[in-house]
Image (cartoon, rainbow, N blue to C red; front, side):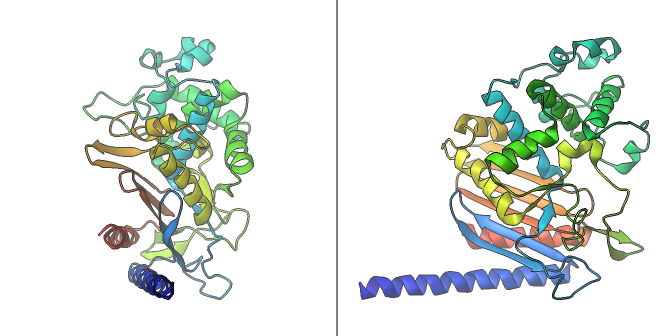
Length: 363
C-alpha cells in the first residue's frame, strides 16, 4: 500500500512539473509574440490533461484587475460554425429538418427571384460550403451591400434573399468554397424549420439544455472588464473598444459566439465522446456526420479521414481574436488555443505552442 501511495505521489509531482513547464513555455510564447491574453487546454473526452490562462485583457492595461481569468469569455470566430452545425444536428435528430432539405422547399415563394443555380441547394450544401455562395469573409464585401432593416434575424433574412438573387462563386476546381454568408442562409433554414430564431436556438441548446455559458458578440460588448480584441494600427497592437461599429450581425451564425474556455472545452468533449461512439446530447452517428460525413470539409469541421489518421480542426478569427481547435479521434485527445490577437506574430506563437502541446502529450 505504501509503495502504491509513493508511486501516486511521484506521478502527481511529475505531472504537476510537466504542466508547469508547459505553462511557462506558453507564457514565454505569449510575451515573445505580443499576445495580450492566451489560453489553452489539452484534454480527452472525460478529463483535462493540461490547461492555463495567461496574460491580460488589454495590451495597454496590465493591472491586477485586467489579469486574464479562467472565467474570461473569448471570441470563437468561425469556430461558431461547429456550434451552428451542432444545432442543425439537434434539429435533424428531432425531425424538424434533414441534411438533404432543399432551401426552396422551405421558401418556395422566393423561387421567382432566385438565381437558377441555387434552386437545388440543401442544408448540407450550405453548411459544408458546397452551395457556391459568395464568401463575405472580408469587410470590403459588406460595404457593397444595401442597408437591411429590422432585428438581426430579419436582417439576415434580407441578406439571404439578396445573396440568392445574385451570382454565385465562379466555377472552379476547389472541393469547397468557404462562405460565411452560406451559414447565414443555413441558419435561416433552421429558423424556418424550428419556428425559432438562431439566437433562441443557441440559448435553448447551449444555455438551457447543456448549461454552458456563452455570449453573442465581442466579450467586452456588455462588460468592459472582459477581454478586448486587438488590431494592428500603425504597427501598434491596439485594443478594440466595445463601442466599435465593427459587428458581425449578418454572419453571426458563422462566427460570433464567445465562450469561457472551460465551457468551450465541455462542448468539444461532447464531440470527442460522440466520435468515440458514445451517444450523449446527440447520437454518435450524428457526431460522425458532423465531422466526417463529407470529405475535406463536413459540417463546421475540416477533416483528414484516412486509415489510422482521423483528425478534425477549425480556426476562427474576425481579425481581433484567434481560436484554434484540433480533435484527434484515434487518440481521444483535443487541443484548444485562443488568443485576443490575430496578428501574424500571434499566429506564429499559437502554432508554436500547438506543436509543443502535441509533442508533450502524444510522444
